[in-house]
Each structure stands twice: as C-alpha cells, then as structure tokens.
Image (cartoon, rainbow, N blue to C red):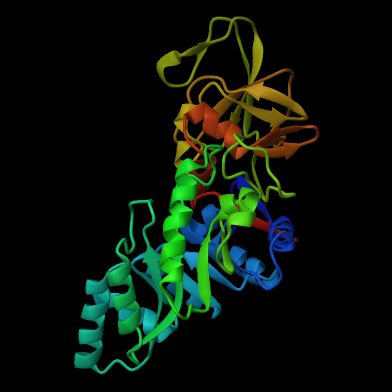
Length: 373
C-alpha cells in the first residue's frame, strides 16, 4: 500500500522553533515553575504526538488535552508524562483514565460522589488523578462555591482519588482592559487561600498571562497554549513580550498554469473576470483542507511577491493571478514566511473574521504534516 505525501500541499512544522518558544517562556518565569504544554485539537493543528514529544523534550512537565481520547492517543504512543484532560469526562469513563494514569478535570461535587460510589461497587483500586476546576468568571466549568470546593477536597482524601491539581481559566487575559481580569484573579485567590495544603499543580496562567501578566501569577504552573506555537494570543492587539518563533508554514505548489484572456472568468459564480490577458495558476488546496472559502480575494506568496486569489476558493483547488509565467511545481506559501514577506494566521483570521486559533486548528487532516528540527 502506498502511503505518505502524494500531493504537494503540506504543513511544515519546525519543532526547533517550538522548543525555543517553551524555553523563552521558562526563562521569563520564576525558578521552579512548571509548564504544561497544551496539545489539544491535534496540537492546534500541528500534530498531537510529535508536538507533545518535542514539548516534553524541551522541558515541559506534562501536557493538556481537551478530551480523554486525545490523552489515550498519547498513552498509546508511549507518552507517559502527566496528561490532563481539560474538559469534563463522563463519570462512567473515568476509570479508563485512572487505569491509564490520565488526570481528569472535575468541576462538581456530584461528579466526585458518583465516582466514589462506582469505585466502591466495581472495586476500582487505581487512584484517579484529579484537578479541581474553579470557575472564577469564565462561566464554563468548575466550582463557584468555596464550601463545595472544600467538600470536594475532603472527598479526594479517599484512596480512589489523588488530588493532583487545581486550576482556573481567565477570560480576558489578552485584553488591555484588566478590570475583569483582576476580578477573576481575586476570586481565584480566595479558593487558593481556603486550603491549608495545596496540591502539586496549581495553575491559573494561560499563554496570555505568561505573556503579559507574569507578576499576577499566583500559581506554580503555566499552561502554554498558542504562544508555544509562536503566535500572539491577542492576534496583534497587544505587542508580544516574549521572543516567539512561528512554527508552521502552510505551502503548496502550482499544479496547472494557463493564459487567461481578457473577458474570461474564473471559478464558481464567475465572480472574477480578467480585465487584461494574464497568467493564472491553479493550486491543489481548498476549503476541505482548511483554507477557508472566505479567503476568496486574499493573497499568497510566490517567488517573494504577493499574488491575489482569483475567484472563489473551491473545495479542493484555488486559482491565483501571476505577475508572469511560472512553471508547474513553483512553490507557493499560503501561511508563513518567504523572503521578506510573511502571512500569519492573524492575517488570515482578519480576512475571514475570526481569530488565529481557528485558522490553525482548521487545517485539516488531509494536509500532510512535515516535521523539521
């Protein structure tokens, strides 16, 4: 069976840059601080297992994922470091996590009580590693009542549990307005102060806090998300304070070239019509690869110059206008740097009307990942 890259469309991931970003964050933190590498959503589109391996080799203490399936994929690939599932796992599947040594987020007393009951009935002896989620204003998951939180801590003293961590998530850490941020930090501190003894991992800092609010970090662990991949959590609203290197380059190559005559139209809806005779190239990438149809009218980089997209982006192909003839197999950069020019996920996000996170996680499995360094 033939496997591997059979199309000249690929996402090149520089793991050396990823290691640099982790080390840059570590250098900016107090000695002894831990970093959890957030590799959920296929490592923000960069490849779950290779990125997790590289992050741990660069000094990350553990990883964070969104769902239990992602954690088990890491375990299946020989990664046995701390792995925390940030989302809520149905209690009936929690024993799978316990057996695999995967840490789970718990945000309610009811969940813990039900797991305690199930453990007694089924004689589960492997302790479940728990991080208690605290909702300080994100409004998503976690404890909001300190008394219930303390009851949960007491329940974690049973042998079927291991109280490994507690955390919160701050909603506006990437904003210049710190009013709500400070309110959340104050609430968080009340939960921290309610305990006589803290668990090994206490984390309230995400990429944005590790970038702009390091003095407000009241914890020993930072969850490094989009900054680990070399991108600004705010897009470009606030200047970066870390030396970040983008790790991904989305590239393809011209697969077809033709001379488009004046008056001829291109792609669905015939929305683009040539005003003059011009060279047109077809690229083997489209919205099924995660290059959004909303990027119609945007640009790519060919031979050190911007070239506009001609007509609508199709499911599997797209067309660009060339300044002159270029042969088949000429490289094309859709996201990344080429010479003095660059196109960032934030640039693409502005065109689409979204955020750089969605651009990165939207690169589909059909795009072959190539790893360097």
